Image 1 (cartoon, protein in one colour):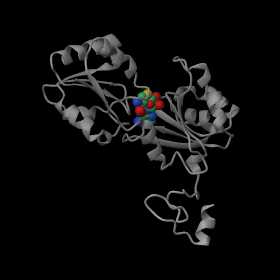
Image 2 (cartoon, rainbow, N blue to C red):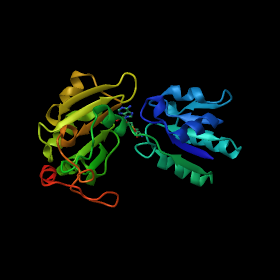
Image 3 (cartoon, protein in one colour):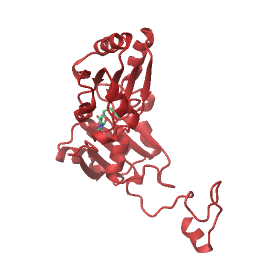
Image 4 (tube, helix red, strand yellow):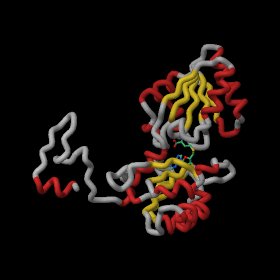
Length: 260
Ligand code: SAH
């Protein structure tokens, strides 16, 4: 069996309990060396064979995993954050399907959430934004035409940009061509949850400049939207005026007015 495991965003204790157990039991580990925290590998068995995939091709990682799994070994393919986001796991799973090798995916904490935590942000603040767009700016990897940043920016929702720190001049232009304003809150979180995490708050109008001034070129999450700085809003869920399955409405007139 091969387990695709989400390593979390950086801090070694942000892997799931399941992921940590599988890592400790693994006979073979292939990890994404460019981003995964090597501290995580300290829990591997002394006999575990550990491979860094950052210098390998898909065929090379696949053959290591297929060979080991076919010999009955426990394998972990360790990806940064959550494997389902920009983890290139589809192509790996296709290869494993072809080879008739079983696999499972173990989710992880995406760097998106590591970054939101660093900012102390709720990405879905009631009446500010109830939508999170997860995307990337187009660089060497193309983005489908219908998903161009300019189009997505029309919603003005909260947005997370992966893999885009070096592409912010054009990204900023595209964001401003949509519903975002020069003063819409934005933030860059570099190496979220690592000991050297850096947080820069800026606006959509100063995003590219902020990245340049602070030499931010990689391993950064870009978060955008009014939700980042929205204060004083109230949810229905915890409003005394709002009854639901687990709690009856309790509101006084005054409290009800505050929640409107
Ligand atoms: N699967 C990963 C994303 C891999 S793509 C996840 O769920 O987080 C790599 C991109 O993720 C980087 O270019 C950067 O945009 C982001 N990233 C990964 N780790 C990060 C971290 N600790 N802090 C900020 N951004 C990070």
